[in-house]
Length: 135
Image (tube, rainbow, N blue to C red):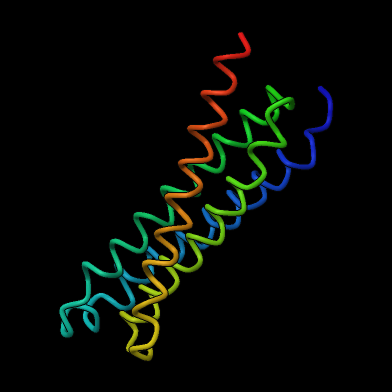
């Protein structure tokens, strides 16, 4: 089997890193931090962060599979990997930090991460539509 392309390896590496950290942080919130988060009413914030974190790890794994199967789409999909990775770090990362009592200025970072995630999904849609027209 041929070696995956650089864009596929990057997407898969990001998926692995986000998946690993997402499971670890989800478990941390569900166990070690459960009482502390509950006392401050922030379990939902942590849960939302973990949900988006793991969801985008899975999406990146699927993207890596697409890039490996169809390397011709790689140029249009490189930014999807970047947007989802950065978006997850900003969105979920800011929520984790806020739930831990981080500074209030992190609040506006969360929607910036959301915009990056949405941009990644839009770019994925556009790449898929371009692919349909080429058939």
